[in-house]
Length: 119
Image (tube, rainbow, N blue to C red; front, side):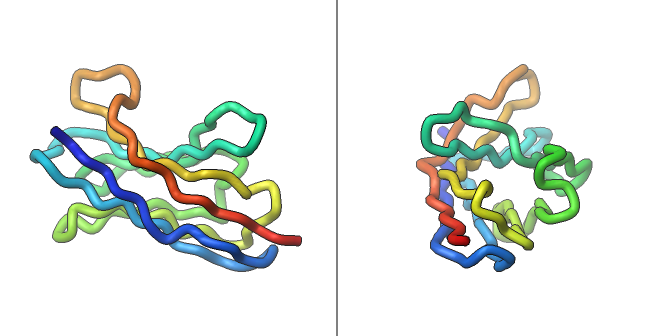
């Protein structure tokens, strides 16, 4: 069973930076895709960024492109989301997710970590 544990959320002023981490454990995830999603109060969960388990092919939502960077540390089985130039509209609970090789949607989720950006 795959487990995902996020960390790194917090409160930051507009224009600041935060780095989120997602530690994966439980089984090898070779060939899987890892993603970050977020859900703001009163809104649906939305895609933020994704990357392959091997650390290739990053993909971003237009709203974060150029500000956020997703990366993977293979030695630590950890996925990172570096968030720069944060804005109040980035305030949300951020979730790490995993999608298996044959899965057509993300099916394993972490517990989420709160990111709050003050103006």
